[in-house]
Amino acid sequence: MANPLTMKLEQFTRFEAKERIRLDALLDYPSRTFARREVIVPEGHKADSIHLVTDGLAARSKTLPDGNRQFMAFLFAGDLCDVEVFVLKEMDHDIVAVSEVTCVLIPIDEMQALLTESSNITMGLWWSTMTDSAVLREWIVNHGSRDARSRVSHLLYEMLIRNRIVGVTADSTVPFPITQEEFADATGMTPVHLNRVLGELREESLIELGSGVVTILDTERLKEVGGYQSNYLHLDRTEQRDPEVSGRAGDLVEAAPSGLLHNAAEALRSPFRNA
Amino acid sequence: MANPLTMKLEQFTRFEAKERIRLDALLDYPSRTFARREVIVPEGHKADSIHLVTDGLAARSKTLPDGNRQFMAFLFAGDLCDVEVFVLKEMDHDIVAVSEVTCVLIPIDEMQALLTESSNITMGLWWSTMTDSAVLREWIVNHGSRDARSRVSHLLYEMLIRNRIVGVTADSTVPFPITQEEFADATGMTPVHLNRVLGELREESLIELGSGVVTILDTERLKEVGGYQSNYLHLDRTEQRDPEVSGRAGDLVEAAPSGLLHNAAEALRSPFRNA
DNA sequence: CGTCGGATTGAAGATACTCAACATGAGTGG
DNA sequence: CCACTCATGTTGAGTATCTTCAATCCGACG
Image (cartoon, rainbow over all chains, first blue to last red; front, side, top):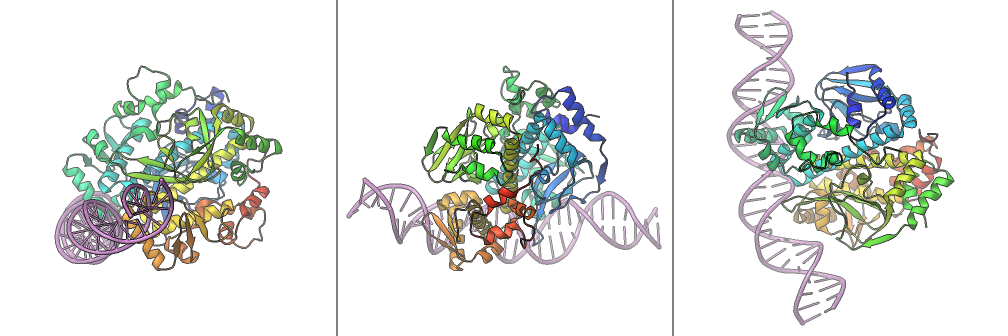
């Protein structure tokens, strides 16, 4: 079984065999499955181990005193839930399971060892938090400057792209096992209004809703409605390998079915390769 | 002159003399001053040097095709504008000068060297991007789940705390050299409505507006209106040194005038100290 | 004194929220 | 196998918040 974390980090740098083996071995640590709705890592938690998602959909979530809940990010296979506690003192938000989620629990000492051994891995993880930051910033734009229609479209489109990157989706079907209430928490609106907006988008034949899946019927128009620009996902490293690829890799991913990024990773020359 | 970057990173780890000298020497690189409104680093920029703010207030900003502008973060002295281009391919947003801003331009090779030399510094910078992420997440909550009143109060309070951390402000006066239009861009609302909300807060004797400064008249109530919780700034490292400090350092900073954090830094035992 | 950027105020309208009812569909237990 | 329940989705009507457009005000500065 391929280690999704390795795959992810290889978007940034190319690992030596030894490093890859080391990373792959992380999957041997005990794993745990969380039910839908279950809290994977609670706010205030001080970790002795780090959670790596290997399956399912999780979310970073914060609940305000008034009960209002806000999702700040979605986590897929290959995403680390709580690298921050490793450096920061404690979690400042919850990680909750949106679908059923499986995590591997990596002891903090092991993580520590990994970082001291390989600066390549350290840099890779740093890169990972940076791309996450870029997504966070885009979410701020989304919440601050776009209306409900755009916000919903934007999130759906982002989900499509992120799934394509990972190679989960070949066509325009996005696995999105989420209730409308949760969707509303992610877009900062009420479930009622979200429902109406989704209705609209469906009415206009932009999307189709199945159980646990969203099908994008008109990717181009959805992208437009969402005001989507792909640069913030930083998918454009392929250029460095293959300059004659017309356009940017971001567009490529949006067009090509799957498996692209892994290839891109193989060819990557990062500034830290020799570090 | 104290290097604000060193000071900031010392909140996380304690540097050896050699490292500190190395960091401090960064200030010798050529610096540049940017006028109000000037773009410091444009979107799409691929850097050969990294901008370190040494004075003034800058902002991360994104402008949508429809002209709508959104600020995603404010940058103070000691903040790096574009570490990301160092790892990512290019900037996905602008850095703009809100007040007059001075930056030191650090050559990318120098930065590279620093990272290879000292894993302590690498970890420190990683820590820095993590705390930035925490702030970004809080901004998402702010935009997604709070109404205008709370949003404005929250931002003001955050600015107060961040200024206290740096030791700029002893009392409750926050240097905030910003127009209401820019303030509106940071809170995701129209200038008109922001103006009304500010009026309200002033009416209620929560704040007072001067030119380039905001005075918080009632910190407690402002904190409450903003629904502010201090944990996301991760100021609580002092506990590790001085367990008898009642409460958390976060609250301490909110109460104590200044200079706290630097002391805290001196005593910090980070998990990476021996790395 | 006039100009200009920025702050302030008013009135009308749109977007999104609240409250509340109702529909649907997947279990669950009789 | 049906009835019941519970979670989720859907729809309606009234309301609040925030926006838009536009006018006016104010202070700094030439």
